[in-house]
Image (cartoon, rainbow over all chains, first blue to last red; front, side, top):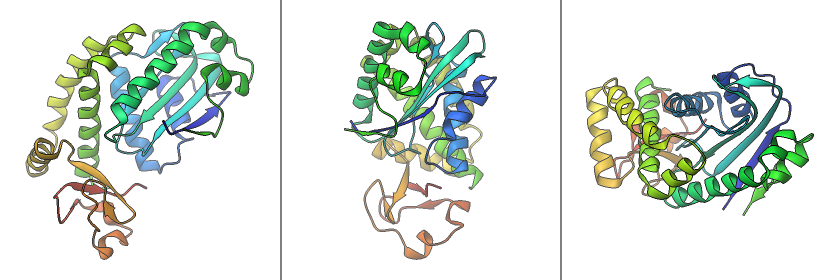
Length: 145
Length: 117
């Protein structure tokens, strides 16, 4: 599975929309594409918030605007209202729409679910970027295979 | 970017979201993580219906026809080619900086093309 991982350890966002925009700003995409991605992620959040563990949110979608799985991880020391629960770790990911992407998307959901199940509290308490990404099973800027 | 093209891209992403939540494996994963996949799916379907009505009838019709035929109606241009059928797209269109300001279709397969910014 090919992917790109981006990270912003200290998010300044104070709302869900701002957090998504802050992480999307790391994406190698133009302003228009980021706006459309924000719209898609917002739709998904509005039909059911993606808070999966104490203070971890997983905004995600698949889109024709990315050509490979792109992950952006962020942490907020003070927490972000999502909007009913406070979130301190955001793992945003967008999968492509290639024919193999649904299987990859499912596999990645399984990967993240496993990491959160086994190390959710450690992920929440991670004190630096490398520790956080290591707990999640990927490295910054790495193009995974 | 052409407003109708923006809406067609959003409609496509919405359809992908619905297709994903219709897949047993993805729904199971999401449910296991505590996400309300079933409820989200129903709401997305309703949203899709309402959203598609905001798209010009001509483009909505083409979108539906292409989706029925190919499974995907909107594709990116990759290195001057349609990502759906790999046909080389007209150079004049590809090199036009304002190419996303109107809707272009692939001359071979008819899919709606957009250029990533």
